[in-house]
Length: 289
Image 1 (cartoon, one colour):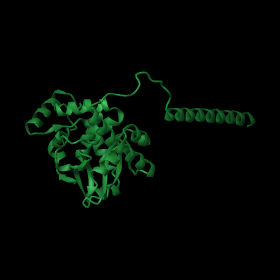
Image 2: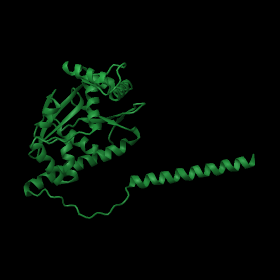
Image 3: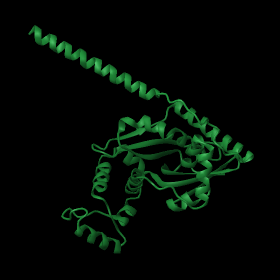
C-alpha cells in the first residue's frame, strides 16, 4: 500500500527510517557504503551538504514554495557593500525579524533562473502539487521518495535539477545515477493497480543565460533503471539475511580511460586536425591570391 503525504518538511522526511533513493544508490556502489550510511542515519547523523547542494535547496524553495522563500530570505540592498560593517549590521537586524540575508551572487542567480523559466514548465507547475512524499513497501523494505512536483492525479511529475552546464546533462544523469532514481521514484509511487507516474527531469543552468531543459528517459534508460532497482532490492535482502555487508570488490584495480574520455580525446584530435587543415587551406589560398 502506498501512502501519500503533502507538505511534509524536509527535516521530517529525512528523519523517517524509510530508505530514499540517495541511500539506495549507495547500495549500488557498495553494500558496505550503504550500511555505514544507514548506521549514520539511525544515529541521527546527516551528510554535510556541499555548496552546490545548498544552492540547489535554495532554488527549489524559490521555485516551488515562493511564499515560504520570501518569508525566510531577504536581499541585501544595493547600496550596502557585501561583507562590510553595514552588511553585518543589516544581517543582524534581519535575523531579529526571522530573515536570512541572501548572498548577492545567489540572489542574482535565482532571479535569472526564474526569469528564463519556459512557459511549459510554468504552466505545468501551476497544475501540480509540490513537495509530495510517497511511501510504500517492497519485499518487506520500507521505501520513500519526495517528488518536487506531481500532477494531482499522480500520473506525471517533475524532478528539478540545477546544473552548471546544460551540455553535461547526459554525463550528470549517468554519474549521479538519475536513471536509477527515476525508477526508484516511479516504483515507490506506483498505485494499487501498479501504474507508475511518468517522471521527467527539469534541468536549470546556474550560470547565464540560465537555460532550461526538460529531459525524458528513453526506453533503454528506463530498462536499466528498473533493472538496477530490482538488483537493489535483491542485494539488500541478501545482505540482510546473511548479515554480511562487506565490500566484495577487489582491493587492486586497473585504471582504464572511460569511453567518455576516449571519445573526448577523439573529438579533440578531430578538431585539431580540422583546424590544421583549415590553416593549410588558408595558407594555400593566401599564396594563390
